[in-house]
Image (cartoon, rainbow, N blue to C red):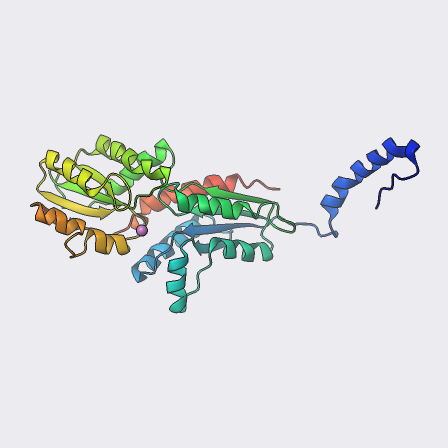
Length: 300
Ligand code: CO
């Protein structure tokens, strides 16, 4: 249908009305393809090239499929470096954009994306920006929602503290300190690490949070440890996967690892090489966030 205003000025208002009325039907009818609602889930992690981490991802996959038995679940890793390492080993994992494109081509109309990140930092917002672009794309998705990372609300902080404490090795005595190594970032969401310190301190005065790339630093942790009078320190990653940072920067034998530095300062160190994604209580928090995101998809 075409609107021609040229010579028939007296019908002008009527023609505008006809055109306006015609517009929505064009948009809705398209080429007569009726869109049926097809819901899916995309799990987006930073990724890891470690074999041990794959088991962790499989556990998350199982937990999500148990909570959503009828919904197809796909995966994406947001780290290009990790994806390239895996590709050389013959394991192809999609980027968030590739995973969303495939889902779009498969006719998914509603996709809930769950971030398996710890803080709402650069990686998380990168995923939000990327997947939201698919919402409303011609012949694309009607609705895309994103579940919050592990730490987002006050309740998340409290639940995460409980989850981590439940997974501290049982032989740790109350007088022993626990040092958690977070990743840290230049992004303003780094504030979630000092915030975590507040919540952990409420629950246990001898748990200290430090970061590799942000604040608090190892020096900050050393100051808190000195005041705590602890002699033994349990070192644990405050990261989803016990990857390179946990194995080298935290528990490695190099002189500048946290274990070496604290041992030099006279502490007896015990390294716990388990990422938080290995804790079922932590996986439960992500699954709860996904339930909220999935609910927000609606039905049309
Ligand atoms: Co890093």
